[in-house]
Every structure is written in structure tokens, then in C-alpha cells.
Amino acid sequence: MLYYDKDKLLEIGTKNEQAEIDCLRKLIHIPTCYYKKHDLKPIITQLTKEFKKRGYKVQTFSTAGAPVVVADLDLGMKKTLLFYNHYDVQPEEPLSEWKAGWEGPGSKTVIGKEAMAKVDFRLVPNQKAEKIQKLLRRHLDKHGFSDVEMKLFEGYGSSRTAIDHPFIQLLANLAKDFSGQEPILIPSHQGSGPAYLFGTHTPWAMCDIFDPETNIHAPNESMRLKDFRHMTAFIAAVAIELGRN
Image 1 (cartoon, rainbow, N blue to C red):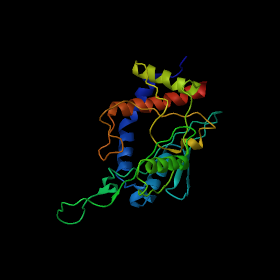
Image 2 (image 1 turned 90 degrees about the horizontal axis):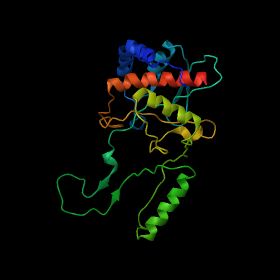
Image 3 (image 1 turned 135 degrees about the horizontal axis):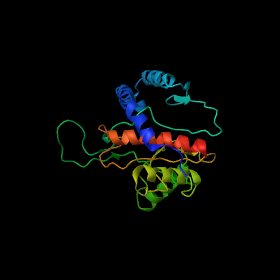
Image 4 (image 1 turned 135 degrees about the vertical axis):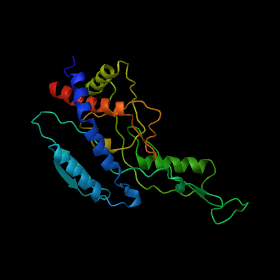
């Protein structure tokens, strides 16, 4: 049984939609690519301002990379609902990381003696980055590419919540109620994030609306307004249902 009122949540979301879009517009106009060495202080300041405006207690923690911003809204509930998101963005189309052939001025009909590429491996549970590195080295050597040099820049663990977990089923039921269609449940996602830090302590999931024109991580990444409206209400519904159950 679901307790939330979808129409009421959509009404509230529609009422506040323009204010939230204006907020989002401010955020996305701030350069936030950590790997391009953008100053992240302006985005952290703006995020802190927006969270405090909504009643959150905000803390910023320094790390070896980008600082972590934690916004906490304590309503005295027994359960904690955690949302994770990036405020620093991905570099757009890193085509410069692929190098082969002549790259100097003019043209030359020569075959370059060197080529370079950065490659991502998306791990599944029980895989370790160091083990995958060793397997790749073994694979290259076996097939005659022992001259290829390798370097592991960074890596971290993986995590996955069982698809029949009550939390996942709650999300599925809410998605079906919102859309009127059977949701698609994908056991593993190719995205990256710090889920491995929480996976042994709490269930987690990623929820999305299918849109072939989203162009995730591209310079022209987008979201349809109706999806923005429905996902805002969906998140509120998740909080209500977790508080009830």
C-alpha cells in the first residue's frame, strides 16, 4: 500500500518549478570541472546558500580531490535517506586523450610509432581494480602486445543491492504508480560513484526516466521539463514512503 498523494506532490512541484529551474540555471552557469582545475569555491558557496535557504545544515569536508558538501535535514525520523550527486562535472568529450599518427603542423603520410588512450573498466561486485589491471596485462602479453605500457591512475570498489530487496521493490512500485508502466529493473549500472562505501551498510539504487536525447555527460546534456517535474515529485514520494514504512 502506498501512502503518498501523487497529485498533491505534482501540484507542489509545479508551483515551485520556476524557482527550482532558476536555481538550477545559476548552478550550471558556474564552471565546475575539477579536472580542468576550475575554482570550486563559487559552486560550493552557491550550493550552501541554496541548501540553507531550504532549512538544511551544511558542512564541507576537504579531501585529496574535490571537497565533499554534506547537507543534512533532521526531521527526527528513525531512517536516513541519502541522496548522492555530483556538483563537479565531467570533462566534455575527452577526445584529446586519444593520440595516434602525426599530430604536428601540416600533413604527413606516415604511420606514427606511438599511440595512447585512457580506458575505463566498470567493475561488478567482488572485482578489484588491481586484479583487473593484472588480467589486462596478462591478456596483452598473451596476444603479443608485451610492448604496450600500462599505468593505473585510480580505481575503487563496486557495489550492488539485490534486485528483490524491499527498498528496490518500493522504488519499482512507485515508478509504476507514477508512469502507469512496468519499470525496467537493471541489476548493474555502468555509472561510477561512491556506492561501495555504503553498499555493505544500506541498500541503494539509481532511478532515471528514459530519454534518448538526454546526452548524459555531453556538452548539451538536457532534461525534459515534464521529467524534471515528475522526478522531483518521485523523490518526495520516496521520502514519504520510507517515513511511513
